[in-house]
Image (cartoon, rainbow, N blue to C red; front, side):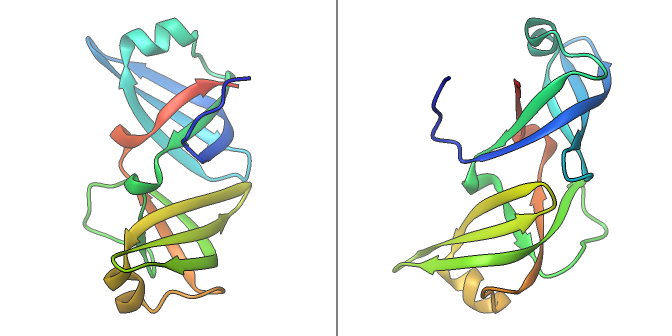
Length: 140
């Protein structure tokens, strides 16, 4: 088993792979039922042997998870996972916000100012926003 510093690891199953010349769009249904899309290289799809039905883990660094207090429209970020805050820890400049989503959990590293401006605390409803280019996939 390989240990990683990336704590956001959500298990799921590939539902579709669309491969272009250099990049591919991989749709994944997370074990909790939510859908995400990862934009990875075509070489990675080939190297991992990804196809519909493949078991994967979606990996996201906490610094690449943004939070909103509700669904966001008019934005290019398609990966929007609804959840609730389970824990908030803040320091002098930054905050770490743990979010429970169906089928797992995420951690978002955001500024202390953002934590305060959004009024985040345990129990707050949030939507985690993740660009598809910031999601990596690993075979499960």
